[in-house]
Length: 103
Image 1 (tube, rainbow, N blue to C red):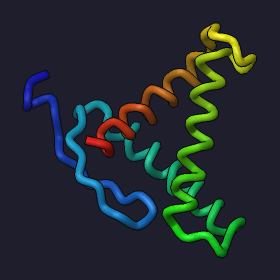
Image 2 (cartoon, rainbow, N blue to C red; image 1 turned 90 degrees about the horizontal axis):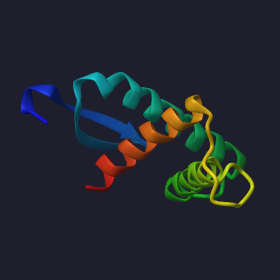
Image 3 (cartoon, rainbow, N blue to C red; image 1 turned 90 degrees about the vertical axis):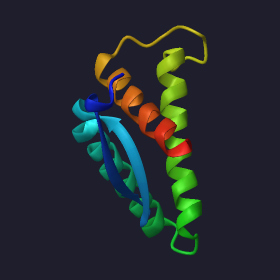
Image 4 (cartoon, one colour; image 1 turned 45 degrees about the horizontal axis):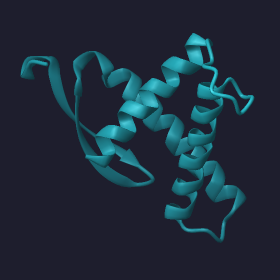
């Protein structure tokens, strides 16, 4: 991948900044995923108001991991893939964001 195809962005997740280097064409999708993650974290904070932000972020991540597992196994616990392209695309976008955050 050429450097010109990449852009540097900073996203805020649960109030913390994360600098990312992403494909130019992926920026909008990543920002939407970040918005979705923050909304999920905020919902957990409202529901579990005695938990700190890190706990809520962990719970949000767990819900995405469960959704990923269900999509990979077709929701049945077996190793048959899901063929829903919308879910697959969202999971791929989330996976890419998480990979950038963990680098």
